[in-house]
Length: 171
Image (cartoon, rainbow, N blue to C red; front, side, top):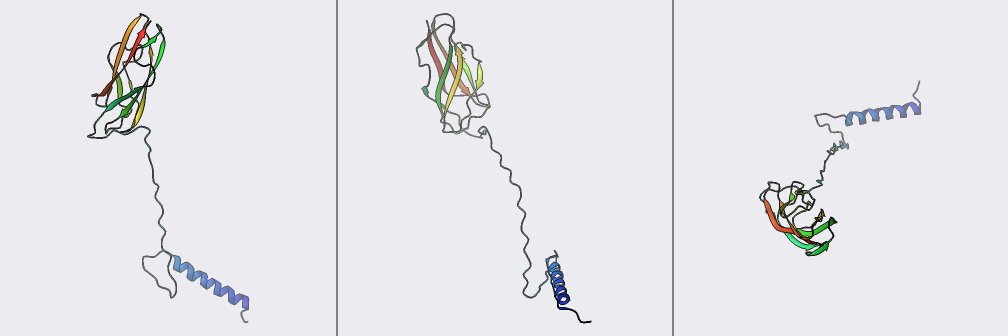
């Protein structure tokens, strides 16, 4: 019995598949087949994890500087009512080489705290940037002039920069 044309094609196809599979198998020995270039291994990409900090990170051997720029609200000498709630805002610049982190604070250094905490977080700011400082205060009930001074402190608890203050007159 003669093989049919179909049987002959099936055998050639089977042989080609076997040769192809044998050539594709991983082996430590390099096998050369005339006219066949073995596939190169494609490297599997590694997972890259990127962490983005929400606050600036502290730096070693840097210099802390806070420079007062402007009173955004309540200029010096503003007349207020007794017991009035006040929203004081200052504009400052981080002129140092350190980034201000959430470990930096603003602390009262003179005067009455006017109902605010004696220490509060300093607005995180990168070196060279402009930052707002905001406080909610309450005017005293007794008429007169009041001045409250605040200063920045770094993560090590060391005072730095310009002193900022609120200066009001209660009627």
